[in-house]
Image (tube, rainbow, N blue to C red; front, side, top):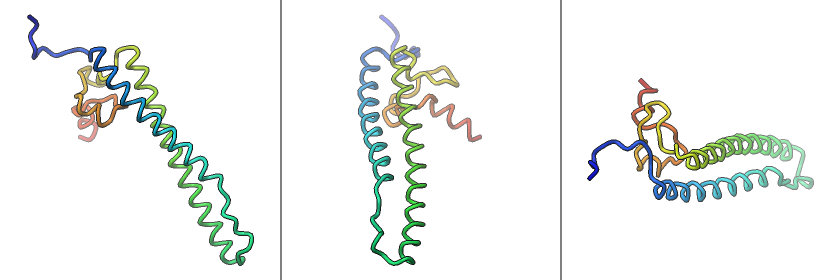
Length: 128
């Protein structure tokens, strides 16, 4: 009988499938949010009938909103890319292995941040 407290080197296929389902849901949600951000940036405010002072203020506000949406879209694209990379790690069965320590990342951490590549131990060392 195998000793239970022996450190495992990777998650089993059933666990990897569970993580894959979580990631696929987050990926679908992230892509929908990115689509919404993209569409909101294309909408016109229809300010043709407003006074020139208000139009100038609205143009400034519109520019700020577009810049903000652009930053959010950039972050969303990075998040989507990280989720897709996590799916690749699941496929090659390296998902959940810390790139710094080589140890398994805690399941709770992967549930909360499924695209992470570092354990809490490695992440905390970054800030010391």
